[in-house]
Structures are given as C-alpha cells and as structure tokens.
Length: 332
Image (cartoon, helix red, strand yellow):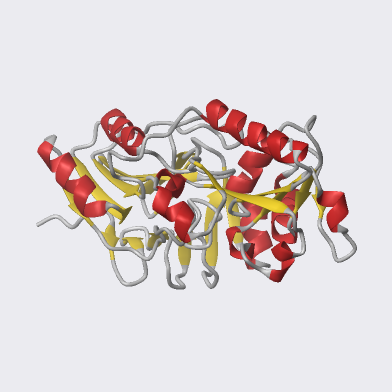
C-alpha cells in the first residue's frame, strides 16, 4: 500500500520523503512555518522556511533563528518533493503549503480566512487531491458579517464612549487581530493607545503594512490622557491592575467567539464584536469546494461535526488531533 505523502506523528505533520515538517509542535531539523502565531511557529527547530513577511515576526518572537524566506508562488524542491507557499489571508505573512510529489498534491492550509481584510495578502484557493484544513469555526452558527460593517460598529462604539468621557478598551490578539483593528480605526474620533505587546508587534510589521499612529502606554501615562480615546490590549490583560488604573472605561472584545453571548458574559466583557481571522462555516465550505480536493483532513476546531458534514456531501473526510489551539480561551 502506498504511503501518504504527509503523515501525522508525535512531532507534527511530516513529509518523510523530504524529511520536512509543516508547523511542527516539537523541535525538528527542518520546519516549514505557515505563520507567526505561537501554536504554529515554535522554538527549537534547526532550520525554518517561511514567507518573507513572516521572518521579522517569528524572529521577534523566537530570537536568532536560522530561517529562509520564500515568496508566494515560488516553488522549491527538497529530495524531489516540490513545495510552494500560497497566501492564507489569516494574518500578515501567513501561508498555505502546497506539497507535490509524482503528480500527487496535498495542501496544508494552516490558519486561514477567505475574506480580504486589507492587511494580510488575500487568500488564494489551491487545487489539490488532499486538503488538510483547520475548522476552528466549523459550525453553521458561525457566519461573519462583512468587516466594513463590524468596523462601523467598533468606531460608533468608540465615539459613544468618547461622548461619555470614558476610555474604550478593545481586546485583540497582539499579532494579527490588533493590526487588523488598528488599520480601520477612525483616527478622527481620537487617539489610539496600545499595550506594549501590541505596540512592539505593530512596530515589527510597519515596514510591511501602513498603520495609523499609535501611542504606547507607559508608567508615565495618566488615565486622564486616555479619556475619550481607545486602548488596544491583549485579552490576557483583562481584569489586571494595568486595566483597572484606567477607570472609567468600557471594555470590548473582537473575536469570532463573540458569536456566543455566553462567551462575552464568561469573560465579563461589556461589548462583543464578531471579528475573526479564521474562516466561518461558509468560508470553509467555499475553500474546500474551490480546492477540488477528494480527501479532507480536519484538524483543530469542530472537527467531528465538520468532517461528518463533509462526508454527507460526498468527500472522503476524517479528523486528526493536533496541538494547534482552538478554544474559547484563545482569541480567534
């Protein structure tokens, strides 16, 4: 029986012929990295291969590593296996990985979304025989509004808080979500302040994507300066001493999980905006259809439900456990 081109083992997704892993979760010799989030780009690999735009991001996170950059659509061969990176639309520098050997083609999506967010290079469908896809939001309940509508809601919320002389605190992951929010905030409303983690990551990507001016919050920042303005902060700061010093304030979270009102109550957030850097239900189905694949391997997310639905549609679909994160406790 012919061995699969890609297999899952205790270290990650492995191409034995090329001796290369895709987004491995344990240290390996050769790793192709789809994007800069910590569950996909981990420390300890000997050699990293990723998109050029992702290099400053993972170097900021991982330090002095051996890394080779590739362009989208640029093919490279390792032991007669051809690899090509394609835009995933997830965050800046994110990629899908196309793997081809003797006419057989697999694609690993990494994390991705089909909506063009104006920040990341837009997603491109890639035809293949087997598709390894995330399904973080693989339930019919998850259907995203066009982001223009969401940002109109965010800016209206900020404007209302400013009228009440309150600080608006908006939580979003420091890599990806924060820059997407920042790009479309209405700077005519007021000033944009940032937590250090968001400021540092934003500085890393300013050479790649133009961003509005921000002010980093320091020990010298007075809460009176923040009144009427907006603060971008990582979700981990919610309820911290750092936040409590900003009273009076109003909090909000931008995440796909805000679809569920219970998630907002659980986090004790005043307002929830449904904004995700992952595909919704329709986006996942669209991507799978456009790939023309025959087999689908569903990784992190609502894998069982989504794979069962794909099977009903006629796909050869199954689930696969990985160590990529997908939960209400992670900003998505």
